[in-house]
Length: 130
Image 1 (cartoon, rainbow, N blue to C red):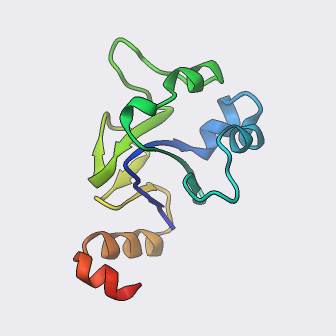
Image 2 (cartoon, rainbow, N blue to C red):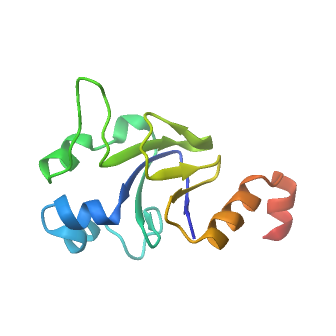
């Protein structure tokens, strides 16, 4: 299932973490405390690191661990910054989203359909579904 968009998120492809992040996926999950706490998420293709606000982002840490960031143009193709309601800081060609969820372009079409249906629902409908 696509990842839920929290207040502020860094979204990164698992393939990028595997290829570039020092220590790979195992170390990334340790560094960002994936496990019991459900703040950070993952699906088949993505990791989503959730923060309370944009000032909490750890771009420098991601760069230290091997990801690329263009400080002059304030962008990266290694990760994306996505804020609540689907506002992104820059576009990456591998990520799509609506106001509630983000997904990789290679995501299962049925999962995308479900995320789009939920994302297009009214809050009353979402609350009723829960």
